[in-house]
Image (cartoon, rainbow, N blue to C red; front, side, top):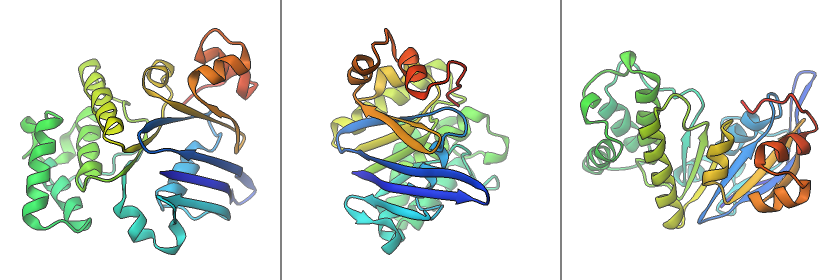
Length: 244
């Protein structure tokens, strides 16, 4: 389980988060939505330990992140918006390296990398350096890296950005498999169809605060909207809002 309790964060004169609280449960896929500048990325970065909140508490499986970030990271797989691959390493080496960082033995890291390269259909690029990868190849390699240590919890920042249609379908199937195995999946997206297709729960952030949370059906009932896109616009109060 991933939890945010009263998170607040300021950057200079900008109050990025004021009061963000929600829980992403095990065995469910939770979508994080909000207009540009709403605080989605800041929230995710606090949850995956890159940023420290000014106030509030972030927890992974009931453990406060700030007290033992290494322990929290061991139970967390992260796919950031910028894939952040090491360009001088091959796809295989990127995945194995992160496996080693997560405490896997050399043999275990190799075995996990081989399995993920096959599962995500990366065999054709497994021994190529990441510098020349397409956006889709970078994203899939970064996803394999996030999964290498078989984490209980997964945070994905716009996971389908740059993927072609077949790859998106395979990713959705993978996320559903993880959910069915009891994993906690939290992701942000600007693709409303993706949210409607995948999410069990939705958290809507606007101006650094959670303005709504619930199942897709609950948000539709709350707003009286015919679809999630219209519900989002009603909840954020901005008919011109974007979801990036």
